[in-house]
Every structure is written in C-alpha cells, then in structure tokens.
Image 1 (cartoon, rainbow, N blue to C red):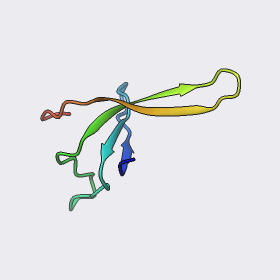
Image 2: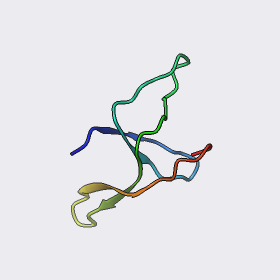
Image 3: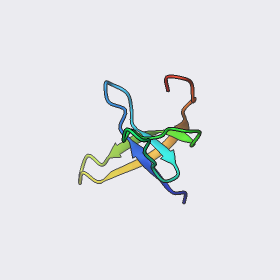
Image 4: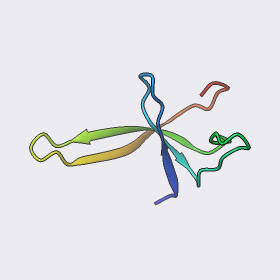
Length: 65
C-alpha cells in the first residue's frame, strides 16, 4: 500500500487520490507537484450500505489539472 491522501475536486468532478504526504505552500494551499493522481470511484452495497473506494485511472497532469 502506498501513502497518499484524498483531494476533493468539487463542481461536478470526481475526487482524486494523490501519492505522498500533503504539503502546503506559503498561502496554505496544497502543493500539487508531480505526485501520482488517480480518479477515485466509490461503491455502496445496496443491502447494508458498506462503502469501498478504489483509485482506478491515473489522471493526466496538465496545467489546469
């Protein structure tokens, strides 16, 4: 298992799992850097409500990613 954290992508976008330990810049915003990013998909059992999350597809890292 690799160390990482979940980043919320609001405004209709899915969340992301980012590799590494979160770091902040001088203004308090997260430093995105070149850490691996993966889309997160969640699945819920319709009977008991159990949730599972998976980091499925790697996200391209463009200027506005």
